[in-house]
Image 1 (cartoon, rainbow over the protein chains, first blue to last red):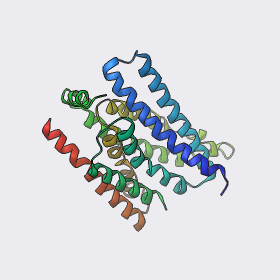
Image 2: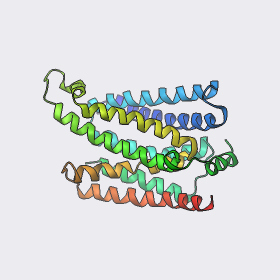
Image 3: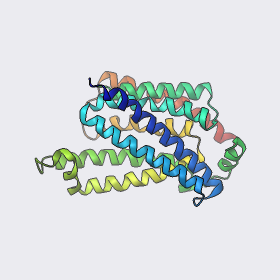
Image 4: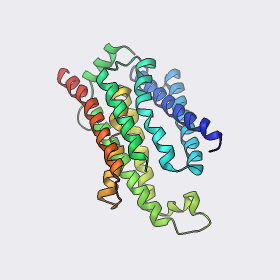
Amino acid sequence: MRWPVFFLIPIALIAFVAGQLFLKHAMESSAVRGFRDAQVILFLGCGILSMTIHFFVTLGLLGHLDLSYVYPFQGLSVIIISLAAAVVLKEKLSFRLTLGALLISAGIMLVSMS
Amino acid sequence: MTKGTRNKRMQNRPSGFANPWFQLGFGVVCVLVYELLQKRGASETANLSQVWSWTGITALVSPLIWLAMALMIVSLLSWLYVLRYIPLSIAFPLSRVVDVLIPLSCWLILGENISSRRWCGIALVVVGLLLTARPVAQLEEKL
C-alpha cells in the first residue's frame, strides 16, 4: 500500500465530518438569523467546501483502491459525527444514542466489506 | 444554539410534507432511488465507448442518470431542511438506514447476492437504528 492512502483516508473522513458540522451549524443559525446573514453564508460555504474536498478525495481514493476497502472507513463517520455533535454543537448524547451510533458504524463496516 | 430554542423550534415544527421527520424519510428514499438509478444507468451505458467509459461521462446518455442527478439535488435540499430542526447526533445515524435499504434493494430488485457477513452487518445497523429511534419516539410523545 502506498503512503498517501494513510493520509487521504483520514482527510476524506475529517472533511465529511467537518462538512456535516458546518452545515448543521449554518442551518441552525439560519432559523434565527435568516439566510442573508454573513455568518450563515460563511458556515454554509465552509460546509459545501468541506463536502467538495471529501467528494474529490474519495474519488481519488476509489481510483486506486476497492470500494470495499474505502467505504468501511465511511462507516466510522456515524460514531464520529455523533461524538463531534456532542462536543462541538453541545448536543445531548445519551448512552443509548452512543451505543446506537456505535452499532450502526460497526454494521456499515461489515456491510461494506465484501 | 441553546437547548430551549431547539425544543421551541421542534414544538413549532411544520406538519405534513414540511415535517422534518417526513423530510428525513423522504431524503432517504431519494438517496435509495438515485443509487439504484445510477447503477442501472451506468451498467446500461458502460460499453458505449471504450475510450470514455472509465470516466463515467458515457452514462450521461441515459435519462436514468439525469433523473438520479435531480434526485441527488432534492435529497441534499431535504437534508439541509432536516438539519434545521433535528439534532445531528439523531438525524445522521437515522439517515444511514439507507445502508441497509441499498443492499436489500439490490438483493430484491437487481438480484445481487448478500453474504452472511453482510446479513450480520445489516442486523447490527437495524439494532443501532432501533436504539437511536426509541428516544426520538419518546421525545415526540412529550411534545
